[in-house]
Image (cartoon, rainbow, N blue to C red):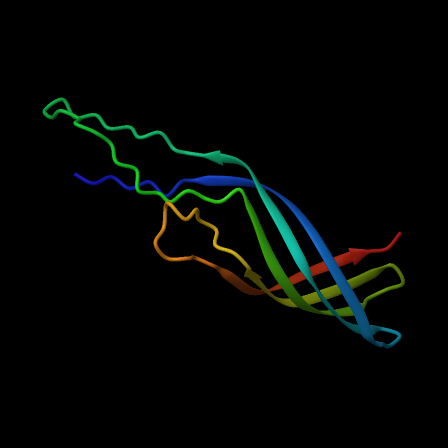
Amino acid sequence: LQLQSPIYKYDYLVIPIKFGYKFLDRPQFSVSAETGLIYSRLIKTYTPKVNYEDPESQLIGILNNTPNRIEHNLRIHVALRLNYLISKTVSFSAQPEFTSYLNSIYTKQSSTTKVKPYTMGIRFGIYFDF
């Protein structure tokens, strides 16, 4: 019998170091780019408890094949920010971005392949300037 539980949770302390440049600035519209490094430190791991009950069988053992996460990792971040001024204090923003890990997220003992994930996406937001 094989039981799977993908309910692992990880808490990280994230410290971004980013630099940006605004290369188009019109009265209602602006475009800027940003890049930088993002440092992450693993603070806490939530591991689910295995719960198995069957009165007609005997539990011999539990084998956990979940790879261990490394404690520190580093990512590179690149984004393009588009801002549209709606009023004097409110603006709408869209930001396509790409982030890639520079090192593996798993320890060397737990994985034979080096897993370096990346993300691509777009963020939307409304900014209020007071």
